[in-house]
Structures are given as structure tokens and as C-alpha cells.
Amino acid sequence: MPESFPWEIVGVQDMPAAADAEVFVGERRWNVQRPQVLVVCCSDGRLQECMDEFLQERMGVHHYDRFYAPGGPGALAISGYEFLRAEQYRDDCAFLLRAHGVQDLILIFHGPAPDGPEEAVCAHYRRILPHATPEQIRAQQAQDMEEVLTYLKILRLPVRVHGFRAEVLPSRQVRFAPLTEDQ
Ligand SMILES: [Zn+2]
Image 1 (cartoon, rainbow, N blue to C red):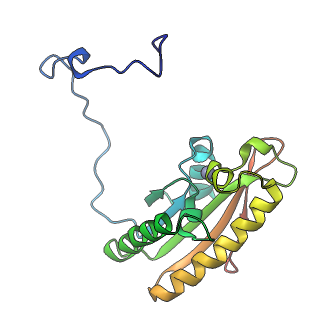
Image 2: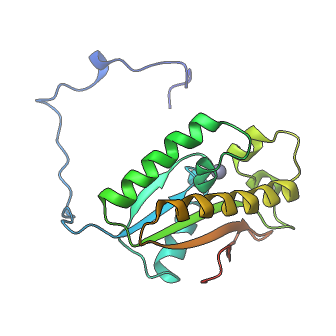
């Protein structure tokens, strides 16, 4: 990493010329099958490997569409904050559900467990609720889940919804607590 990172922007003229570059072609093949599973979760990269482990080991989901945004399903909740942002994400989510023929929708909020590390609080919720305790944020996420479920019912789509909260434990393991009744 250059010493001046992140302020130094590497310009196009500093990139290797296309003809000289070794172009990467992967071994894996594009999958023609639509997954029929859409996962909505936060962009927070600290969680992604735990998320993949949960999806694969517990849910049996290996092939899935991703809708990653700050806050995860919280991006779909209006909750008195950021109405226009929620409307836009809702439209995009509804588009994916319809256009990709999604049958299972997995919604995953995240944050610390009650005894977990405070730095695991979702940055989206920290932004919209700067003075809230982790417990208050947990309560807000539960309320947002209800709001998102109400919205999804209005869409009247044949989609099974599975809701979870990924909770970081003191050991830094992640517990996936169900937020919907079918789990
Ligand atoms: Zn987050």
C-alpha cells in the first residue's frame, strides 16, 4: 500500500497497458441456473465468511443472489429515517424477487450478542441511531424486521421469508438467531 494511501489515486496512465497485461480467465464456469434464493445482508465484510458458512452448513444454500447494502434488511425499513433510501431499496428488492423468480428470501441483520463486542454494531444503525445502545439497536432491528415482513406481504409474491440476526459472541463466533417463525 503506498504511504500516502488512501489519498493517492492511481491514474489510468499508471496501469499496465492492456496488451501487456496478463488477462485473468477463471477456472470456474458461469452458472446458467438462477439460484431462486436471494440473500439480503449488510455489506460489512467482517461478517461475510461467517455468513457463507451459515448459508452453506445450516441452510444448504451454495448458489444465491446477493443484495448487500449497508444495514442489510434494515435498508428496506423506513423506521422514521431515510424514507427515500428505503423506497429505492424496496423497489430494487421487489425487482429482484420478480425478475429472478426468487422462492426463498433470506434476511440477515447483524450486531453484537447481548454480551458481545460493541464494535460489532452495524454501522448503518450506528449512523441512524448515533446515541442508541446495542440493546436499543437490537430492538430497532426487531421492529424493522416486522416492518419489512409487512411490506413483503403487500407484494403478494410466492416467496418464503427466513429472517435472522447474526450476533457476534464474546468468542467472535457468530450465532444466527431466527427472527421469523418458520425457523
Ligand atoms: Zn452492517
